[in-house]
Amino acid sequence: MLRSCSRDWNLLSQSEPPLLSLPSCNIPPGVNPEAYQWFHTVDTDRSGFINLKELKQALVNSNWSAFNDETCLMMINMFDKSRSGRMDLFSFSALWEFMQRWRALFQQYDRDRSGCISGTELQQALAQMGYNLSPQFSQTLVQRYTLQGGRPGIQLDRFIQVCTQLQTMTQVFREKDTSMTGNIRLNYEDFLSGAVTRLM
Image (cartoon, rainbow, N blue to C red; front, side, top):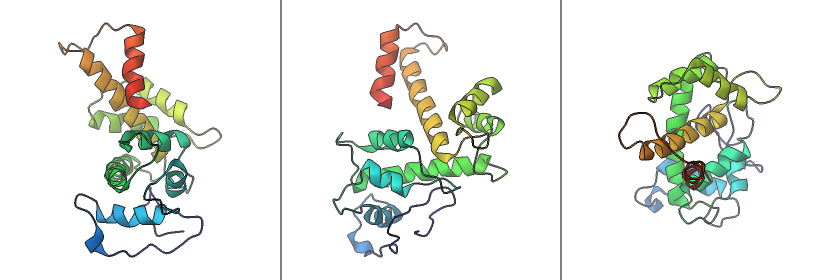
């Protein structure tokens, strides 16, 4: 197991090599130095890209469970500008920054340090993000994304998935709500088109 870069996002490798110590002079402009080091550790086939399998092996929740496939694929789709199903160093660096922001928000509201966020904690986190949603809706999200047989609450991977999907759907809504009334008229196919182009 590699050293943890945080309590909630750790990078692992099956063969457990030491973290590569690469010269900092090789880091391209705009690339996070930590992301640069981790990229070369996670890129196990040395292709210069990280695929879904490599990313999934790299990401774990605070209880050491692997990130779910849906979240990993969603993140690759978000940062894979070439639509090749892989991320290069620059995309991975952007993902790194994205992950650090979500991890910090997750830790802020996981007040009992359980590694899971409850419905109440999720509602508070979403309120900080500007979403005025009911406690019932937050609880519905938690019930939907709680692991079957696990403790109630959502882990970091599902938290990222929920928040990212909410942001995406809100963006679709706001593009149609040109008068900023909070209400829109939208046919079903337009709604699906807006969602599919951003979430898939």
